[in-house]
Structure formats: C-alpha cells, structure tokens
Image 1: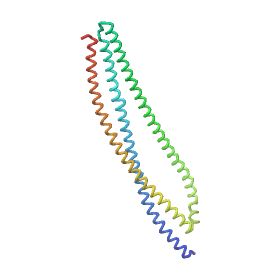
Image 2 (image 1 turned 180 degrees about the vertical axis):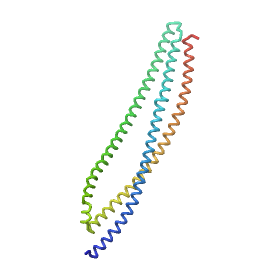
Image 3 (image 1 turned 45 degrees about the vertical axis):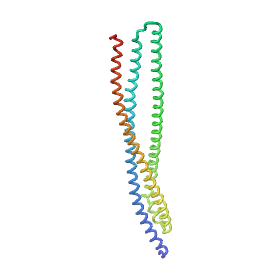
Image 4 (image 1 turned 30 degrees about the vertical axis):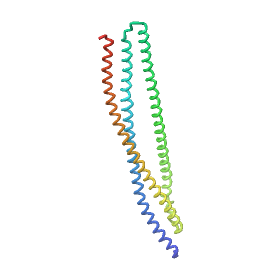
Length: 251
C-alpha cells in the first residue's frame, strides 16, 4: 500500500503533468501557426523569384537585345555614310579609310565592353545557380532526415504494439514519473523559447521580403519604362537607316 509521501508525490506529478499538458497545447498552436506563417513566407519568396525571373527575361533578352541591335545598326549606318563619301584627293581617300577604321575600332571596343559585361552577368547567374543547388542539397538532407526518422519510428511503433509501452507503464514508479515530468518541463521551456525566437526571426524575414517585393515591382516598372524608351529609339534608328539608304542609292 502506498504511503503518504508516495500519495503526495503522485498528486504533485498529476498537477505538473496537467500544467505540461496545457503548455503542450499552447505550444502546438504556436508551432502550427509558425509553420503556416513560414510556408506563406516561402510562397512570397517564390513569387519574388518568379518576378525576378520575369524582370531578368524582360530586361536581358528583351530590352538588352533591342538596345544592342540599335547600337549595331547605328554603327553600320555610320560605315555606310563613310563609304558613301566621294574622296577628291589622296588625302581625302586616306581620311575616308582612316575614319572607317576608327569607326570599326569604336564598334569593336563597344562589342568587347558588352562581352565583358555579359561575362559578368553570366558569372553572377552561375553564382545564383550554385546557391540554388546548395538549397536543393539542404532540402534533400532534410528529406532524408525525415525518412530516417520515419524508419526508426516504424520499428519503435512495432515494439510498442508488441508490448514495450505496456511494460514501461507497469514498471513505472512515482519517483520515475517525477523525473519524467521534470524532463518534460525542461524540454517544454526550451521549445517555448525556441518557438519565440523562430517567430521573431520569421517577422524579421517577412519585413525584408516585403521590402524586396517593393524593390522588385519598382524594378519591373523601370524595365517597362526603359522598354518604351528603347522602342522609341528603335523608331529613330529606322528613320536614320532610311536616310542612310538614300546615300547608297544616290538620291
């Protein structure tokens, strides 16, 4: 028969267990909310990445291609203009050839500069790809950890079904329960602390993501405005080409 000390310990354990049960419920709600907020945050980040890809495509393969074509066409028009010059003397003939060479050198310098910038852009894109690969590896490691955890729990659950958990309960004592309760309290306090930190970090990330989103949208607007200016330049380049063409026909 249990003595008075054991009965007091059992009652104490029961009260502490109920307190832990409430903390667990509250923590479950907090952890679940944090998970939902993080998934929404990830969704926002993925949306930003999609917007960045759109801006990259619009700016690089769109605006840049038109702008580069504009410059190349203008250089070609210059060469046609020089070729259309009628040299009246050896000095003028030399000038014509020299000026044509000078224009071609300018064109080559421009292309070399564009190539250098293109190389820098490609290097940065590769850095992004490396970062994405690192992220994929982190995800794979996380997934593998979950799979290993499931494998372990399957084996443990089989043991529980076969009577391991029942044997633990039959061997339980008030003192052992008190130790378990104390361990649960420590773990819960640590989880609550970590949960609060995680929530604060999520809030900080959310603020940064919101600022990034504003910047991305503003960049998209700038790219669209730049496209209008480039397309307007294209019309002027075409007009310049038509006038240059008249030099070839002699009209």
